[in-house]
Every structure is written in C-alpha cells, then in structure tokens.
View 1 (cartoon, rainbow, N blue to C red):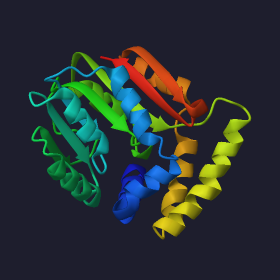
View 2: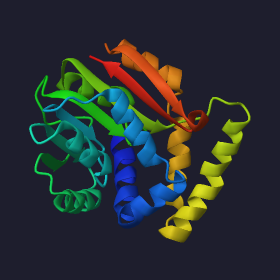
View 3: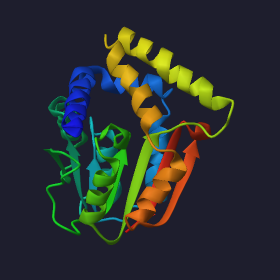
View 4: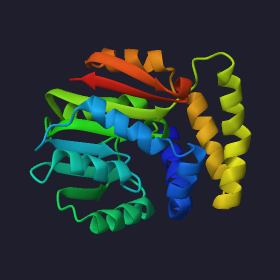
Length: 234
C-alpha cells in the first residue's frame, strides 16, 4: 500500500513539473548535472555496440548521450513511468537523428526484460524516487549480463561537516522557492529535499549493492558529496 501511494505521489510530481523540468534541473544544480553525467559515462567506459538500459530516463538527456557513445550498432532503452517526461524525451530523440533509442513507459521495480538483456544499466537522479531501492537494484542486476556494469548518479548528502547543513538548507528552502517561481510548484520541489534526506548514505548504498551480489563497487563524490556516482559489476 505504501509503495503504491508513494509511486502515485512521485508520478504526480513529475507529471506536474515535466514542462520546465530541464530548466529547473539546470538551475538547481548550477548547470553541473550534465558535467556529472559526462564524467559518469567516462568512468563507465561504454563499449561500441553495447546494449544499455537507462532507468528513470526522464526527458532523455542521458539516454541520448549514451546512445551516441555506443554508436549505431548499439541499442539503448530508456524507461520512465511519467508519460509527460517521455513526451519530452521522444521529441529530443527525434531531433537528435539517432535511431538506436527505444523509449518505453514502465515501472523500474518490475522491468519488462529477460535475464541478461543488457551490458550496462544507468540510473541518473532517479533511484531516490523509487518506492523500494533494494527491489529496483535487484531488478537491475537481473537484467544485466554476467560482468555487466551499473552506474548510479544521485543527489546525496555532503561528507564535509560544514557543507552538509548548508546544502540541506539550500534543498529545504531555496530549491522549493525556485520551483515555485519557475514552475509554480513549491511542494513538488520540496520533494527533492525529503527524498535526498531519506536516501541512504553513500557507504550504505555500497553495502546494499554488495549484499545483492555486485562486485568492485565504488563511489565518487561531486562537489563535496552533493551528488555521488556509484559503480558496480554483476
């Protein structure tokens, strides 16, 4: 019951903010999120011709970057549960000229793919929005080949003692105000603060990945830990 209620709430949030999501995302991250995504892909070291699943793909920016990296022989699937976010992604994919991208609507806790369907899986700023982190991670492991890799990019809590309270104040007060001014949605952007606060610490996420069978798990902080990238191998 709780999972369904949470998913309904998160779905409503993203349906509400879809039209101005990209603008708000850029401003809130001080236009660093694309830089963090590029670095994550560099560390992931995508191979040409690879099959990749981009979970919680949103408006498709990371999906398109991944598709460019794997080349025309590769195949990239983007999955999201918000139809309005996917509408934006479809438009971007159409403008990109790429023909190796498939976008589907679905729930990342129950992926519509067979065991070992993908070489890589990515999830950017989406894991904190799912109703069950562990179930989602287990699903990702299931659809990866043996030796397949996962990259998780997510908002986090800074490791630096002075920076942590300042950043949390920024998320709690400044970000919702920006959301209200840009999108007319204070409560929707207050969710960023609540979901970040509830999300596991970086070290705990490492243990979660290891406990379900991922190996060589590591993480990298960006900007003192306001965002973190986790990598692991099945």
